[in-house]
Structures are given as C-alpha cells and as structure tokens.
Amino acid sequence: ELKDNTLIVVFGASGDLAKKKTFPALFGLYRDGYLPEGVHIVGYARTKMDEVEFHKRATQYIKNPNNDETITAKIEEFKKLSTYVSGGYEDDESFQNLEKHLKEIEATYQAPEKHRLFYLALPPSVFIPVATHVKKNNYATSGVNRIIVEKPFGRDFDSSRELLSALKSSWSEDETFRIDHYLGKEMVKNILVLRFANIALGAAWDKNSISNVQITFKEPFGTEGRGGYFDEFGIIRDIMQNHLMQVLSVLTMERPVSFAAEDIRDEKVKVLRAISPVEAKDTLLGQYVGANGKPGYLDDDTVPHNSVCPTFAATTLHINNPRWEGVPFILKAGKGTWPLNEAKVEVRIQFKDVTQGIFKDISRDELVLRIQPSEAVYLKLNAKTPGLATKVLPTEMDLTYKRRFADIKIPEAYESLILDALKGDHSNFVRDDELDVAWKIFTPILHWIEGKNGPRPKPVTYPYGSRGPKELEAFIHKYGYRRTEQG
Ligand code: BG6
Image 1 (cartoon, rainbow, N blue to C red):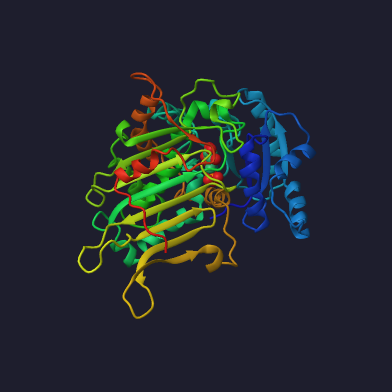
Image 2: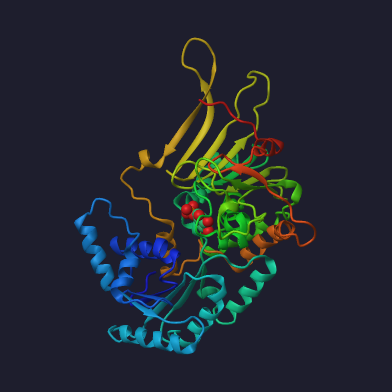
C-alpha cells in the first residue's frame, strides 16, 4: 500500500536516465493521481544549477504534444513539489547537506512516520559509495526506507556478487528494488496472465507442442553518443543478460503457488537454474558497419578503432527440465537493425508441424507476443479458405491493443515500476539470486568474447539499418525455425 509523506530522492538527476525516464514517469504518476499524499521529489546530482534550470531539465521530456492546458498546469504543480540539491557522491558533507534539505521538507509533515525512497539513476562507479552514504546520513529512522538501483549490475558473475554483497552490508533485500524495466512493460506483465489464466494456452505450453521460441530485440539506432559506455559492455550485457532473460523466465517458469512476489521469483530462479551456460557454438556475433547514410560502429569517435565489441548477438539457450527439454530458445538483440523509430521487441513461439496425413505442406502455428511498438498478441493459424473447395489458408487471430483497448492508456514501464516500489511490491524487480543465475548463464560466453581464454572472436558485419547479419537466417534455421506463409 502507498505510504503518505514519502520523500523521493533521485540521484543522478541531471543524467540521461533521470531526464528521459525517471522524471517523466514520476510526472505521469502525479498527473494520474497515483503518488502518495504529501509526496516530495528531490533531485540530486553533481551539476551546480538553480531550481529553474533543474525544473527545465526534469520536465524536458514530458510529452504534451497538443499543449493541453490541464497538462501544462499539472507540470507547474509538479515543479512545485520538486526541489534540487547539488553535491558530490563520495563525501559525507554532501550527504549531510542533503539531509538538512530533507529534514526541512519533513518538518512540514504532520504524521510521525516519514518515508524515503532513494532512486539511484547512477553509473556503476558511484553506486556503492552513494548507497553507503545514504544509509549512513539519510536513512529515515521513523518510517520505511527503500532503494531503487539500475543496471548495469556488474560485468559478470564475480563482479555482480561483489556489488551484491557491498550493497547488502547497508541495505536489506526487502528494502532493495533492482530495476529491469522490461518487467514493467505491459505485454511482459501479460505473459503470466496469458499462460496461467487460459487453459487452452497452458495446455500447449511445452515441448510436446512447441518447436522453438525466439525472443527478439531490434533497435533503429546505433550507439551514437554512448559508444564509450557501450564498448565496455556490449550487446549481451546491455540487453540480453537482463531484459531478454527476464522475458524468457516469465515465459518458461512453472506456475507459481500464488501471485505473491516471492512465489513468482522462486519459480523464475528455478527455471533459470535449469539453463546451461551459453556456448560459443550456439552464438552468432555481429557488428554494424556504415550504411543508409549512417556511420558504422567503428566510425564512432568514442569507440576504439579496432573494437571487436558485438553490437548484435544471437544465442540459443536450452532448458534442462521435463517441460522444455529439446526446445531451443533463440535470443536475438541488435543495435541498428530496425527502420522505425522505436525498438521492436517480440516473442515468437513456433508450434510443431501437425502430423502429416490429411494436410501436407501447411504452415506451422505461431503465437506472437509483440512487446513493442504497439502491443499485440496474435496467433497465426490455418483455416479453411471460404468457398466450395477445401483449401487451407494461413491466417491470424489478432489482439492488437490499439484496436481492442483503444480507450485505455498503456502505462510506461517506469511508471508501473516506481509505483510498485512505492507500494513495496517486489514482484517485478530482480531478486539477488535471480541475478546470480542470469550471470552464471552468460559469464563463460562473455569471457570468451573478451578474450580471457584465447584470441577475441571477430564479429561478422551487417549494414546499419538491415535485419542483422546475413548469417542469421541459417542460424535460426539450424534450431528448427521454419518461415511460415503470410496469410
Ligand atoms: C536499456 C539499454 O537498458 O534499454 C539501451 O541500455 C536500450 O541500450 C534500452 O536502448 C531499450 O529499452 P526500451 O524500453 O526502449 O526497449
């Protein structure tokens, strides 16, 4: 439940993440009346700026395309409940200064209980110092304290473990909310409902009916402007080990005992533990080169000129349990692989062929969950072409949200997750042991890519704006994917 009189402190308030995601999400919640009574937002960062400048930056990405007056008015109200403090990330004095500011605001609260939510929109280098200083200087003694942390959470199993234990020395698991924003996406949240509220789908959800599954992430842009960060991490850490693995775990976990956070997370961990580490033979790496008027990855000044960092990866995972034995799960993620202006993310579940006999050479059924853009669930299936002859027609049942739920506004992932954190609901956050197993699956391949045990593998190339490396078609074919006919 929501706690009145909550202070939300956003560290890294002048950074990209805070501007593009955190503040717009906080505003969205405020606009729709979801923030608790007496909420106050404090931005904190190193940048010295006055409140006017801070408000300008914090509201810069809030959408109001038609200059709607009520939204403009709400933005003004939102500014009134947001203040700014600048300071360092590593010295006590800065945090004591912040504390003074927080106390001043809290002095206006009537209730004895005062709660604090600390949001760390920060690079990993300052993440532990801030968490530690906050615990020491800014921890509310008469109320609930919570901390939200963002990825990247480590570089591999060992470094993630180090971060985990450093954080645990000051914050309990119950107080910690590790964000993977994919868990806040509407269609990802729908997966549990589709699977466990439908007997028809649930019955076909295993190796007896499913041939292969693809989880795909395509993005229309490269690493422009963040090549420095990206080159250190690569596409597997940026997208696959976290976002796509979260989708995979809700897609494949067993039915939880209940909808409670720990029951759900227990099942996610269990299925992840049944996955063997990714092997080089099941991996295809790519790097984009300049095309369609866009520069290549190596043309970026912030990227070392001979970098072999993959901007595209396809890997196939195998789940060693009775439900999924023998079903390949193909994960694909690529920068610069999609022409539209928003990333395209989808899950494609391809069913097995029907037994030959009455019908020959017909398309396989496919269930597609489009996570973005434009959420949709559609089932490609065969039907009889209407008419006197019996002819099989590949067609589809289509649940496109824009049409079916035209009047319902779909919340942003960050809105949904920040609200959950305010309520103390961990269901859609990453638990420590979940993180551990996800890293276990990818650490060997990451070390191989980074040349820890031999020469670094060279990625194949693909043109910016293409569908990825030309080798991809053969790769997915190898794992049993068959292109279906268009209806
Ligand atoms: C982030 C990655 O976690 O997710 C980015 O660091 C990526 O590289 C982004 O662009 C994609 O998120 P979304 O919500 O746009 O699909």
